[in-house]
Length: 77
Image 1: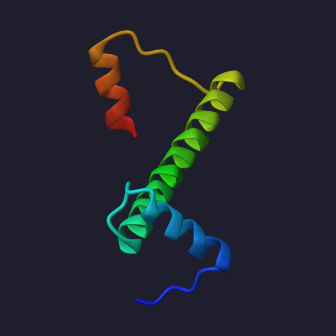
Image 2: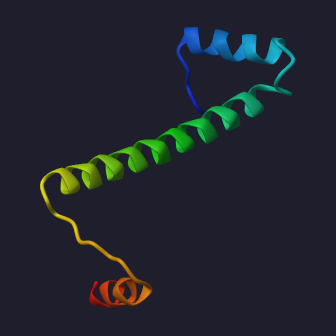
């Protein structure tokens, strides 16, 4: 796979390798992609939390007091 980077990003990759914290350019890009994936997952989780908070605020919730009630609710989904 070949990837084109802007001159600024190429310089950033070179700086990261020169810092000694990364073995080579591939290591920098791999770490960046892992961080991007992690951030995407965090963003999705935050969106789900926002949706849940809106549901609670708007009265779209149920109260579950016992394991049996929870089991029944889960079966109904």
